[in-house]
Length: 457
Image (tube, rainbow, N blue to C red; front, side):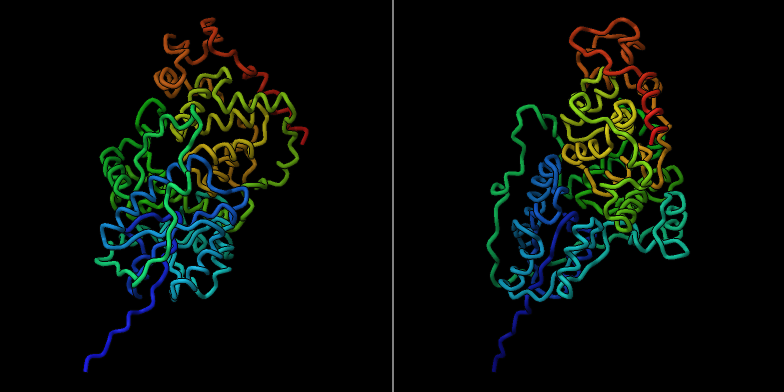
């Protein structure tokens, strides 16, 4: 007598910022339990004002497209649904008869709330950090508030475990639930002058290619990363943000060479910022040093006009304008220029750091809740591990120091014909073309105004 085999109930694989098949512990665990239904939920409600920005949505379109192709090549498929993630997943559990939801743990406050609401139906796994960030704690069990101390503690448990292989097979359910299409979601931009240089390749394979290319030049990283005109940074941040490559995979690709230490610390910084926002969920909205919230930021029509000039790269400071135009065109900005543009908004223009944080959130393809918040507060001097507000970066001298002349020529074509060193400060050399704006404020005047405001708080 033949006994019919009973197919085990399927399990859901809830994907968020972990859009990969390699080193994907949630996928491996799900595949061991039974047929897998991979699901991505476009949730614009649960994050509230931190719903995914425009540049991230552009990247998401490409990343989901590549992931869908990779799953289909293995006999599986990606289910797309839109709505509040908890409700969507609960409905899918009932609709498919799935027994559990497997997912990689996330640290954004809205995802932590969603994970808690899913309760026992959810199995969480680690996989997006070198080590679970909230497990790297002080002797008293609290979160580290200074990166150097966090790094010393984290370093004791490094290197991370080696990356996990892709599952050999991914079993499919007897019937697939209905899925949206990417076109339904209209993730790609429509503004005529925005994203014209978004020439990135999203997806896990592209992340692997970029990582392998970077390993060949990691020995030059510590110095080359400061030069805006050079391709000295890894440009892996959007791949890491969307989880197309895991930090552990990247760590082991680069290896333990001493010259890789600076980049290892950059990976650790991502862990640090995740742990910080886990301990202080409102860090993106509230100053880490509460006394700094009394600083008299500029408001009103004049401040709004200055904010718009900064956003569009029309401040009269070439290095600042080059960075902001690079951001608008490509969805990315060189790291040192990010610091200069952020410092300029906060200290030269005396505009609340949260205005810049939200602009970056919408325009950066790698905008990350923890990284964005902690980096802005670090530059603004409002964070718990930050520069003092009185440290005011001099963009004109920084531009010359870090050889930004060719960078400026590329992104500010009005200045392309100006020779060095005048290109860094054409106003001071009397060669500013009429098509380029005069300085929105002088450096000395801006510095004195910022220091006076700091004294008044």
